[in-house]
Image (cartoon, rainbow, N blue to C red; front, side, top):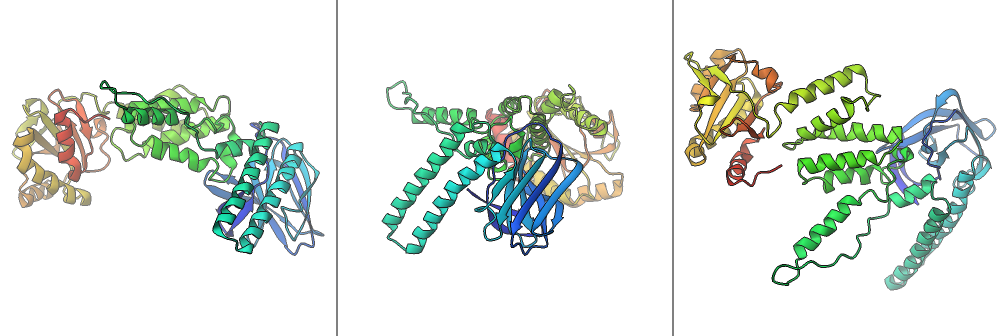
Length: 479
């Protein structure tokens, strides 16, 4: 099988995959020697894959066609590593329990002529597999060179693929715990079983419900072929683990409700079982993913994951400072999640008159934190104002615009220049520290509250505000 990878200072090349056992423990110092007959290279580098990137970490120089990589104190995790020359030509190797390995090959074709002089049985089994795949590749190459008719080409390629798939399946059955077997499985698509067609009350086929059932099965069985208890998958080419894993959150979970995403996040993490390396990655990745998410309501996912894994001490690899920072942020955000009730906010206007959100009798009240010196505010605030002037009575809304800066003259000038007619308030004088409570570190920030001061939406861009208000009023807005 071939993978396309990119590595800094090395050109992109198609590489043949070397076998690796799935071992969950780090092992002792490494000692790797490879003899390449007639080698013209002065040096080779040793590197590894991690998620969607590659890293080089050691260099060996040519001594009588032999390259030796050795470390007395560095431990290597299970995964796919590679040896590369300085021109970008390289071959992949496996790292498992073995501390030492001795390899021998010819400069003509590193992979084809590789011999395991000393190493694991797993590595030897891999090369037996590679001998078969090398033959399949040569057959396919000759077929392309013959320039046969398309129908003949397709039929012959189908035969080659069937044989290749059979070889893979045989390897999986013979060596189910090897990482190469787990790689083969991880790249298999999920097969949705035949599901009975549900019917509507009138007896006709309910195709919508049938598709929903198929989607539910796919969503629940997405990781059936990906062994999340194998940390070695983290160190494989990106199309093996990273792309499939990333697709789950970016595509499969994209339109799911927040509580559904939280439930599935826990399920995914549980699949790591006792694999510390994989569990660490999953917890960190999912938490950071939803910390950075631009979608409304996803902050709840971050909060719940911090409470479940950081606050309980499960994420024991996190430094004390990072732990405290995340827990503090989660506690702060928990008060301003959608569905939470916030205390009445009261501030003074430019004339010194107090205004409180509790005095509002509209269906919806919007608290908008902004500042005249904010570039983004200069674009968004006039758009919010336009909707307010045109639709405030239609939708029964009021806007409490809170100035967050100390330049009062600039604030008053902006209000006058833009003719802002909503409730303009000076945030420097208020009944509580709104900056701390609402976590205001940038502007504009906005919260849409109902009559009971319950947050129903927040941080809605001006272009989407009317659409969101309509959805809230109709009861269709649900995260």
